[in-house]
Image (tube, rainbow, N blue to C red; front, top):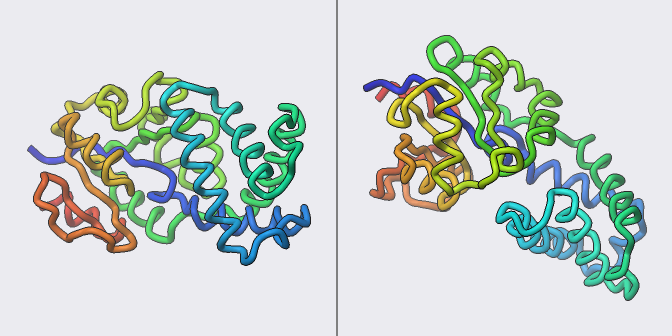
Length: 242
């Protein structure tokens, strides 16, 4: 049976989160006078991403809220950057620090160059949607800010996010909710994401046709586990036709 719908991850699939995060975070540290505490910018960025992964996992597991995970990231980073008072930083101060970082990060927002052309090619023949481990408002802002939201609004605004859905990828329920929102059975839907374990394996196990977007070429071209590999979104239309 042909693929009739495609669900996408957002961050580092359609939206260049890593690139905008790097540019914005380093600009923020420079403005705050904190970059000089690190031997090189890469060390500061590596620490921020290590903390982000840990705290985001707590958020997606339901342990803390989206706002609380942001505050925790700020406290952990400033503590490890040498601020002894950071662990007791009030929520309001942590939120203000994070908001300043966000203003720099958002100024660097960009979609991947292959995102809009591929969505435009798929839209005439496929129903399109999003399944993301995040909050809906945050992902809609990214999609709107990079000109991609319109491709999903035409199909009934199918944007399923873990914050509102109540469970996160790789749980099968969130993938199935995306399929239901498209009005299609799982075997009629492809899922495309950059994380092998969370996106590709999760989608495959939920009964969708799984595509792992491996832009960096870190994995095998044919892993042999029922998951198809893409090196670019530009490969997706032909892969769906096959």
